[in-house]
Image 1: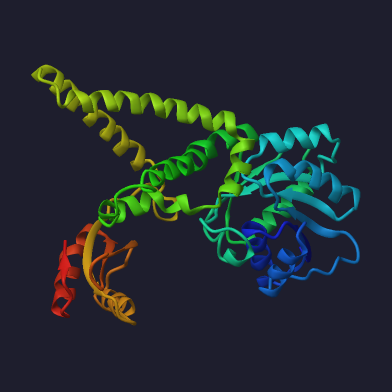
Image 2: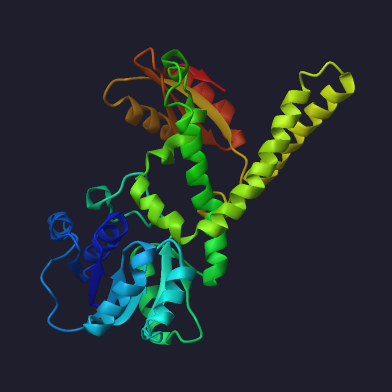
Length: 361
């Protein structure tokens, strides 16, 4: 792999380009908006100058509804030897590619499972795909050379390749990405006209749930339009669960003791189902989930405090498995929640308290 063309210089396209240029690949940038391509180039993502001849691989980073048309145009121009796209929906674009008569042998669909709530080239980063899954959806027509070319890009970006059928991919992302985006937005929407006093009580729980609600509506309309039926199926099942949960909550206030017990059992059942589902989410490095304990440290809002805390945790010989920072809305302090191995809780707590930190287990 020596030369690549990235067609579409938003968050994902620019991030791929930055990762590849960092590995010595010559990247040619294209975008329907020349200013966006120039912005990506100014960040070091590549050049807006056209290639002298066909590049090794063209990466099409456009919304799902445009993939087929852009691929057809790229193949008509003989832009590359092989082609892939990075759209978050695969079955619809594949059907359109077939309908348009594109060369299926030189093309393979793909989808890096990475992103952030901001969009555009200025939000891009070369490390966006490090350690993240990158789905490939080859067909019987896909050539070995096309597959190998995209596998090389996945490796250069530091991602983990996963081969899936296009329809199975779309069902999976509806469950783990598309429906959660809508649910996050629905929860955040309840805050739009909420009393200011209530909003000021927001803690880490609501921040976690609503973080992705800051995403671009236009971008998500494009994505959801391409996977609407599957996402609707997921939400329909969820709506049934919500209905049962509402009924159980109403029962908790009933006069009849038996009805109250039934309501409590219903709430406990959904919470336990949530425990079981959450426990299936892969843990560190994709390994089975590991149970960690949390050590919470009060952190002053001064430069260098977080670095000092991490340094003293390291000096205590403890590895931080995860970290969450919760900011206080009323004081110039925050709470740093350090996830550590259970055996490390007591010695770490003692070591930090010995250095003057306010710690709670």
